Length: 458
Ligand SMILES: Nc1ncnc2c1ncn2[C@@H]1O[C@H](COP(=O)(O)OP(=O)(O)O)[C@@H](O)[C@H]1O
Ligand SMILES: O=P(O)(O)O[C@H]1O[C@H](CO)[C@@H](O[C@H]2O[C@H](CO)[C@@H](O)[C@H](O)[C@H]2O)[C@H](O)[C@H]1O
Image (cartoon, rainbow, N blue to C red):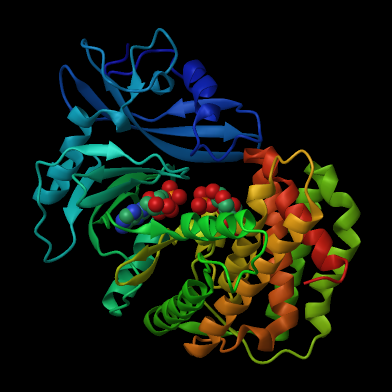
């Protein structure tokens, strides 16, 4: 045991434990080394709570992840998967409500412990004394819900500076945007001697339903009733899809107003096409099923260079928009999680982008919602597939209509058909890599969409 409370030889157990965590972004590559930084003691004694940043070395990439580690003489009520090996005596403590209560207390009181600063947002008075439960959703980070009142997101992969999720939430809030949950506090640590956001506290909306759950329920209802078309089925989603399109356009307009835009010239479009081609090469090198589609995908990307494009501009965007990132509340749609693609390096996440990328992400998600009920089916019945695609077409169109009607910064997405198609296919290539690394059973979903689009279908 070192003086800081970490057992010697923790690197081995950590290297074995990390790939089993949903939020660990490096599952597709071997871990060469894990180097824990000096921990911050958040709660002293028994139980003990440590905040630990670990550098994970994978080939030429080193990423920093944060952990909350607990140790106590009385066994905690945490899942067996939280234990870091059999002999370390340490467990990942985000599920230990006795220990995580202090995080909210510390934000409410505004305090600094070692290198970690806890702060409420200016003017916020928080209710402390609430216990937390981790949410069970599939997540890239870890979120704790305090008494049904607040949700604290602990960012797992860290970078120096203000996390983009926090930055954009704050900007939208200042702009008076109705489509985000209020930020009420934050936690900041240190990375490479610079401040780095490690947590964001927001109001929790207990009655909200996520877009993915609503959309897939609608598809299930449709497929269960062979006699009806999507517009006749009880669970039709098109009205929601249209309102969602409008919400996304309003968020784009507010982000442009709050954080500015930059015009896109031909050079920028060339860089965009180059980046799409590079991603395609990278993914095709690791996922052989993508290889037959490479020529058609390249042609769709190259079409952007020669197309007559209406003027477009770049700005801060969501960066990884899909139906799991939106919540339907009684007051309308909210967008969540503005971090961007979890695998992208931080400078790429902060790069200004065309808002059409978010439109493309959401259009892809309607395809996912339609196709996911067919994942793992031994044999797909052509009639079911056709009906699911009909659902996707109807809701994709409704989303585009809602977006066009709300006067977002790019107007009608269909006015940018060549670019939009390229962005959708680029997103599908990203999804191929994501599914290959995380959910191989789902690989068929983006691959089928690529095949349909490049065969001349929608
Ligand atoms: N303010 C909120 N109110 C209610 N539920 C929320 C709120 N924020 C997030 N959630 C739930 O938590 C899930 C994960 O949040 P998200 O920000 O997407 O985390 P991650 O970055 O880990 O993917 C969401 O899908 C949603 O179900
Ligand atoms: O929500 P995250 O930031 O963790 O996003 C990652 O995981 C998503 C899956 O959970 C993944 O989204 C893909 O699957 C969704 C259905 O589960 C679908 O709605 C999306 O359209 C599809 O891209 C996302 O790509 C990934 O970055």
